[in-house]
Image 1 (cartoon, rainbow, N blue to C red):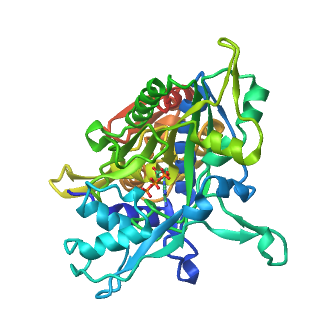
Image 2 (cartoon, rainbow, N blue to C red):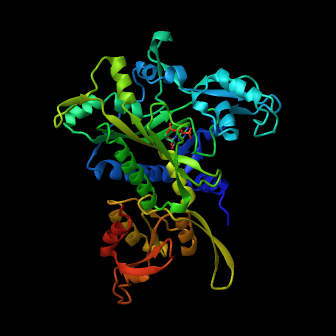
Image 3 (spheres, rainbow, N blue to C red):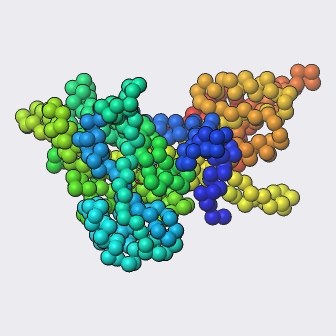
Length: 470
Ligand code: ATP
């Protein structure tokens, strides 16, 4: 059957992946809380990213910079003056839209990024074919400016000198630490700095579950290289990013690499490619923006701070500001893509010919919240089952369930994506009174194939570890 976002949202709410934020107070629009399963899952997404981008990369190191930065940072980057959305309302139906999106969709030939708000207003007025996507009318208010940064204040009294912002992207924490990192790690170019962290944007059109929210996590890498080598590294990271997605189970046909046309490119960027995913609620949605940002960011920070951000190349005896390749990925957004990819409703027929639907999350085992579940066939087997659970939980997350029929328990684990179910039965423990020896074996059921194998308890840890490798 066709999967819809609703199916995924329902599973998330019902099984403890994601809850509506502050639900008992009626919620807060577009805020979401990751529940017991969601937090494990999302941590696994971050771990998988850090493993490939920091641990296994010969080039990259990590960083965890502050969310609240010196406000001058955002003056330098232009976020204070221009990180704003051009908003307008439809007079007929009151729907709110972004002017740049309305123009871009009807007139992809024009470079909306280069237009002032006045120019956008004039363009829309002149083009009757630009209509409200909700009601189809061409009757808009003028554009209003809307700053996307969340403003807050440092100090207990509200005075303007203490205005500061929640960062709208993690990248700037990396740029302002460029010299610190280069000096302390004594890295030569090329090298990259990676960071996972929260970012905040007062988005006008949040929605589609966790696809676009006002508070979200980014996983960003700023990769510094010698000018002139940037396009080579741009190609390298595009490939690396795509492979990361494929190796975690995203199907190639659900991915698209979309190169920005010259008109769409930010003025400082030499090349930008978005990796897009075929979400069930839209044709293609951006997952990962990969941009050659030239030396723009470091140059601006050098000018504004007065601190040298040049690199001394000891091979050529030159001083220069490195070029930057930025692969920027939304953690929540890619987590949603993994859920969409994994979700499946299988139509099965049981041994009595009865039709049944099996809901299953085919998550890569490295991403699954629980790596296995221990299920005693009878509550009488609880002691042995708990002993197995306690031992395995030293190495990875293990679920334990002793309620309901074994079939129902399998289905519950399928639905939350647990790759292996370990069933403890009477043969496992034997029966001393009847002189039946324990076989010390358990049955291991595979989520995807539903096949079962019997194996010694002593082999479980190595077996599961080999399956969850990433
Ligand atoms: P969009 O065009 O979707 O608004 P963007 O081009 O503004 O995205 P970037 O600034 O390049 O996005 O941010 C990098 C990544 O961060 C995006 O590719 C996306 O995965 C993620 N991201 C950006 N905004 C949000 C948001 N509001 N909610 C969740 N994830 C986001």
